[in-house]
Every structure is written in structure tokens, then in C-alpha cells.
Length: 529
Image 1 (cartoon, rainbow, N blue to C red):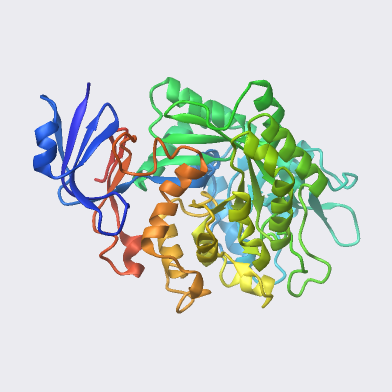
Image 2 (spheres, rainbow, N blue to C red; image 1 turned 180 degrees about the vertical axis):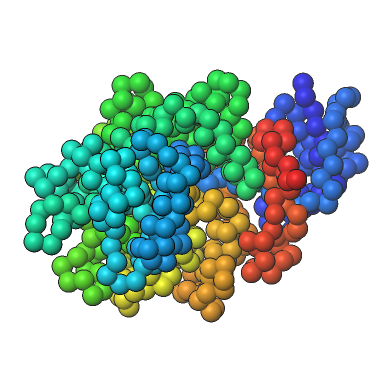
């Protein structure tokens, strides 16, 4: 038996704002007791190790309820185009990266954002051809819902003037012709994305090991991850090698649903490190790519109300197929029309889902009709949201959606209705640091303090609620609240030590707090230098 006594910190269990303990006793990776130093020394077995917390403030380990660790891993060595304010700046960064990384293999990554570029500037295959020639290129947009490819990349993916638009996607064409511009929206980019990512399979194990260190440095001890079988295999290899230091609720890609069913996977099954998660479906696209599915057209774009990535009847069939085989469903829905359709699909199979003991989820749930807000609680559907999207989308979301009377990022209203809200980051779309998300949730402002007073400040939530959504909320959404998500006897000893008390600082200071130590299963897995 391994016994450890953690001492001399302010241990916040999040039962309430005032629930603070000075010591924690852990045996074999699980919490035995919380209390005073004297009490716990009195029950600690002989040989118990003592770990000093040196006045740090302890919180439950953060559970990021919507993550893409494979993408984060792949992009560690990819070009970084975030924040580039023009096409010219973007190409300059790519040129510098190409000079430093010669070769003939796939170029992937980037996270470019054309919404930051001057009006009229668009990504084209010719611009990439001039830099990379015959070297294939596949660059996802910042939201991941568009791919910018060069001619060589398009050729590898078999996309040319004669290629029709796939269901749920669109190949952008050059004016007056059917020639692809190199911009692929939604499902149109799936094949080239898969091909480019496959080129890094041999490196994925090494890159995942690096990526998990980024998470631990942020105090993240568990993620619900949404990616393909290559990432699942990489995580399983890390575990087999004894190198996995974070817990992962492993989602299933839609294209792998039949495989998951054939292998007998069931949501919630697994061990303390890897558990089977829900299947990930897509109802629509994203705001930045102008493909979120809306009840009304985008402001200033007559006829464009987004893309219905999976037609409703097919969505219903997939929900039925998954839950009937014991696999919960998590469906991406950003636009208000997409959210309505997903809730309709879940309602159609509500009894089947309940009989299977499953909980379905909506990923993002960003823009809702007011009449759809109470349906989450009524149907027992998790609202899996990313607070930082609210502030990073400002003012773009205002420009694209206008003044229509719908609920934007309505965390407060969802919580008040009784819905289960789980917070995450959507990393690497957004930074992984959960403190950024906590700050966004309680202020509705970005880290520069904009907009003044916060966007729709009536939707701000209390700090305690925000922290619970980033800890217990993710655990409950994954069906793992009996193992993780809180600091209580019998639960796994996963926690983070901050340098200052998050309840004592001003809200604008929250993003500046730093993680001193991260502990998973009672073992210190990260210490700040």
C-alpha cells in the first residue's frame, strides 16, 4: 500500500465556496480523508509519505469535456498561422516554416483565420503552389471546419473540376468554372484531412506523449476526446508503455461506429485510465466558416443559412443505431437550427436512450432558440460547452448573426433550467488552459477585457459553478462521477495546485494564475520550474 499525506495547502473540495481543508490523505491513488493535519496524521498508516503543498490552493483536477489531443499533438511541429492578420502575413509564416522544414511529405496544421484578413482576401491553391510546389498541403482553419489545400493535395485526394460536392460539404470553385479554389468546407475536406493525418501515424505516439505534458501543465487530469482510431491506438500504446499520465474518455468517430459496435464497445466501459466514450456526429459547421446551420440566413448573406452536415433522417438513424448498441451520442451543433434538429433527434429516441442507461450530449450548443433552452433538462441532454468560444467569437458572432432574438452561449439559462453543463476548450481550436475558460464563463469578456461589461452579462455564472462545470460537470457527462471530478473520500486523487486562491483574486486575474503542481492518482506528474 502506498500512502501519502498532502499538507499545508488550502484544499478546496468545491462542495461550497467555504469548504476548505488543510490536509488530504491518499492511499493507493484514492482519497481516504480530508481534514485537519492533526486528524489525518492520527489515521495515517506507518510509513506514510508527506508532501508539502507550501500554501498552494488545491482544486479538483480539471476535466476538459471537449478535446482533440491528436490534433494538438500533430500541430506541435506544424506551421502556426493563428492570429495572422492578412493573407500576406499568413504566406510569410508558411514560407519561413517551409525554409526550416524542407522535404516532400505532407504539410498540415496551421489554424489560419480568414475572418482576420482584409475583405476580399481568400485562400487559394495557387498561393500554396508557389510555396510548396508538388509537396501536398492540407491546412485546417482555426475552427477546423475548412481545409486550405494546394493543387498537389487536391490531386492526392482525387478532387478536381469534375468532383461533385459531397453530402454535408462544399468545394469552393473558381469564378466562371468548376475548378476548385483549394478551399474545402465541412465534409469536402474529410478525405484530404484523413490522408494528411495518416502520414503522421508513425510519429503520433511520440507527439501524444509531448501533448499530454501540455495538458498537465494546465492542471488538466482528464479529457473527453473526439478523434479517430489512430489517436485511440496511440493512447493505448502510451498506457501499455506505462507512460499515460492523463485519463481519457475516448470518443468514437462517426466513420468508426460500425467498428466500435463490432468490437462490443459500450460507453463507460474501461479502466481508470481509458474509458469508451460517445460517438461523435456533426449536425452543422461553424460560425467562422459561415457553415453553422441557422433558422435564418447569415446577416448580409441572402440564401446562406449554413450547412446541414448530416441530414435529419440520417441523424435519427445514427442515434438509434448507436444507443441501441450501448453507445451514447455526442453531436456537434453550433447554429440554432442545428441544435433544434439534434434535440428533435434525441427526443425521437428518448425512451431507447433511457432504457440503455445512456446520456446523450450536444457539443457546443452555442446559439439556441429560447424555446429550445429548457429542452436540454427535459430530455436529460448534456450541454457540452466551451466558454472561451463566446469571447473569441466576439465580435464576429454579432456581425454574422445580427440582432436576432436567440440565446447566445446561454450557460446561465441552461444551468437555471436544470441542465447538466460540462465545460471544455475544444483545443487546439482554442487554448487548452481551463483558467481561460473559467475567466470567460464568469466575465463574458476576453482576456483583453472586451467587450466592456461582458457580452450578454446576464449569462455570466458564479465562479463556483464555472469550476464545477470544468471538474464535476465533465465527469458527470462521461458517467464517471463515482470515480473523478471531486475531492471526496473514495474518489481518485486527481488534483491541481494553484499559486493563489482563485476565490480571492479579481475575475480579470484568473487567467494569470499559474499551476504549481498536478497530481493524478496521488502521484505528482507535473511541477512548475
